[in-house]
Length: 629
Figure (cartoon, rainbow, N blue to C red):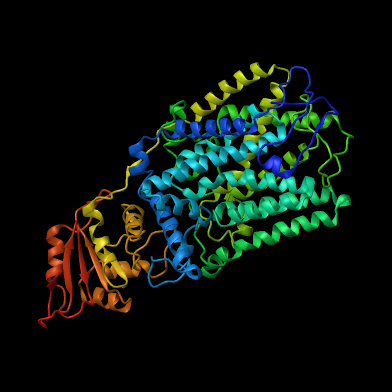
């Protein structure tokens, strides 16, 4: 929470700022603390605070970290995605997208986000012996810490107030959106928004190639992380650049254009990870009432600690998961103060032009801030640019129609990057970030006349209340990894390669919605043997998936055997008992299937499942028919 009197300055460099080492004046103004002589200790404390906040909000135990996941659907899907990515990059890097589901279709990974940016830490944790569940849960914790850290970085750069920056980090990271999407790993990459915007603004302000390089690599992370975020981020960047270039058209330079070209060229490294989605040319149908609604802003997470009345009211709304955007009343009020402070500050200096942007020499000085201003002098323009981008994201997030009126999203739904979008409301995340930053600015303005200790104590109280507004139960389900569950997969790992079908297959036509909860865990277990699977789960599936499902679920009928032969299936797995609450084969049904197998096949029981080999070598005695495995 440092500041200077007007005219005081500090030396800055990109490396210092990105690591939080911006040096402040040696002679602070009255009432201001001396420069921090231990920046690394401060960074460690801030990082520890953010980790502590994530642990408080998720409240994990060692058992829940090591054995459980938010649910057996999408969280488990992304365990498989990351497992496949780590495996394919080492074994077949040119065919990363030809994943081992939806056999025999290519580019199966392109039916969901590839989150390749998370593959290195995932692979490292798995190599160190972490379980599937532990690896995912540690990634979730890491992403929450990263989101807080990068929001803090941007907010601190705008306000030079650490307390305000921490509040912005809490407001953005722990909004109700987090609780309903803990299982959507790709959506937990929300911290890339503040990081990318920060680097973009630094590039525009200082016109240094170092910032441009960092921006380019951050763009790559965004583009290969989440398709939803990549699409709306592209729109936001276009809005920011067009507005900025218009406002500074007389100050354009070759150096700035060079920086933007460098960032753009590095961003093209993401193209190979995007081409498969274009090749698949998949267009998803929009969900009913998929756009952002006014009621979404008061839709709290399920089991809200502080607002059970709002929770009860929201329970009557359909599609609640995609319509939970409660920012917190404290955040909303502070954001209103923040926007008012920005407007008032602009009116007080109507004729003061913003400082000319340009490269900052290593020996140059930069004015930091005066506490009477809500944002560091000269940087309010970036906040306004972000507000413009946020407005664009809200307009698009409204979806195709609102109250019978056709909205702009209809015009862009067929554009690359937007065809795969089904839950349009998710595109509002830049607006959530902007609201959190405005809340930090509002707090900074309200407490600008207070002593540092007093303002810090108030910030602690406000932050605690924010966390209470967002708090709710965290649901967890154990991912089964018993020997009986995994035995058939370990046996498959010892068998020659060959496509596999696991029965009974589940699909999106089931009224009981078992598709994600049955097929996603099978995909993870399939990383033990890496055989191709006819089965699969994702946001959508190949056109013939349901037809194959209907045929193969009648196994061993003639139609099912013909389908298996056409698909060149060698192994059939029959699962017995109940799984995730859904009945598989009973023992009687499984034995009836085994008894009806055609000659030349073998079958054996491994744990809770039967493994059938449709193309087994003839036994030594030359006898045909069923041979026990």
